[in-house]
Length: 182
Ligand code: IMP
Ligand code: MG
Image 1 (tube, protein in one colour):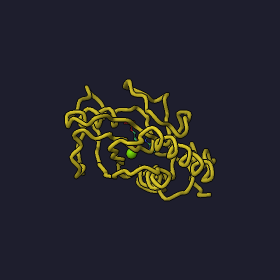
Image 2: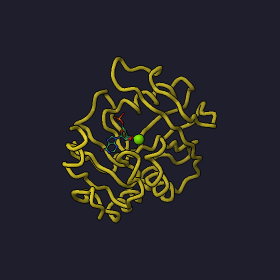
Image 3: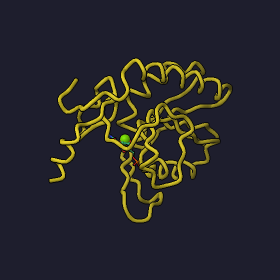
Image 4: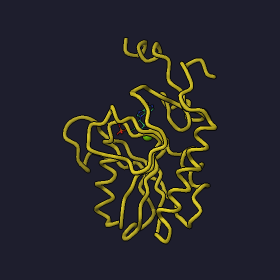
């Protein structure tokens, strides 16, 4: 375990079992549909790659990289697209794959933006949900684990861009964050 980690919140076996469970559910729910699994970079990478291997129906995949400007009134104009999708999504069933939903602002903006392109549906699968942090009315359709309001890292989630490669979800040591604020 890395020295920055206080404790492991969700271990690798639990994550893998959850990916299987979600993949099987999604395969049932989306049977016969024209599915695009849309990952939000970079946090989605390990989760999306494990999840998609448990999806047994034909799907396409694509990625978006967005930065959201938090603060002020939030609208589609306030999400900066660093990388857009290459797929025409008119009539397509979009399933957005996220690492974690916290305030919900990023997803809210992405959903508003994608809605303008007339997909058939937009749903969200997230590995982690932190409902205590929510600032907009957004409920992910598929949730791996609901977690308390702590800062987590690993399995896609970063602290200052590091630790995304850890195979588990860990809670960061309190002193790392408090030192930072001083
Ligand atoms: P929000 O829902 O718009 O607040 O943004 C969610 C994004 O914030 C996620 O995709 C993560 O990149 C980041 N984030 C939120 N909570 C955490 C955390 O506990 N650890 C690492 N990144 C986080
Ligand atoms: Mg992210």
